[in-house]
Length: 162
Ligand SMILES: Nc1ncnc2c1ncn2[C@@H]1O[C@H](COP(=O)(O)OP(=O)(O)OP(=O)(O)O)[C@@H](O)[C@H]1O
Ligand SMILES: Nc1nc2c(c(=O)[nH]1)N[C@H]1C(S)=C(S)[C@@H](COP(=O)(O)O)O[C@H]1N2
Image (cartoon, rainbow, N blue to C red; front, side, top):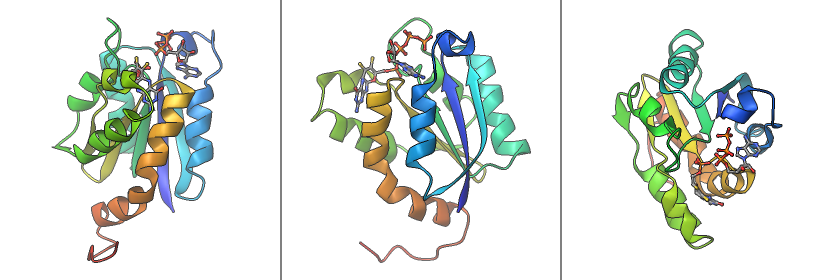
């Protein structure tokens, strides 16, 4: 079981104006992968989002951080920039897979600028904001996450498995 952090990037959510359905869906879909140890709703502001990620990665030593929201083209959508500012290494295959599968569902999938990467031994993945987008993207990446996290933590030595 891995430790999980959820960061919801939402102006409305942070003001208490909308229930964070997307954050709840992430938690529900990850029950077999790990335990949600930290959960924050942060306004769509780059510094606040970067700080939330750094705190969970460095101080709380979380294995996997999922963000939701703020990946689009809106003027306040800065989650990818907040993530890129604090990661050491990109993991491009994760957003590539999310967009590839999602494009078979909606052409709007190309509008998510989501990124994924590592900060030390923490994997950080951006998901879109809508509950539908979260569910569809998590379904794509979930089958590979356990193995990826085990490799990252030095708990799995080989990949010779389908
Ligand atoms: N965390 C969330 N929980 C529930 N629904 C959400 C969430 N984030 C987004 N949505 C839904 O997806 C739609 C598109 O998301 P978008 O990121 O554009 O939201 P928004 O209206 O700009 O608000 P904000 O950025 O303050 O969350 C929203 O109108 C809302 O219906
Ligand atoms: N699988 C999937 N990906 C998706 C969507 C979706 O419904 N399903 N919505 C798209 C839309 S409409 C937008 S605008 C972008 C960015 O969303 P965000 O700004 O809420 O992060 O994600 C896209 N990715």
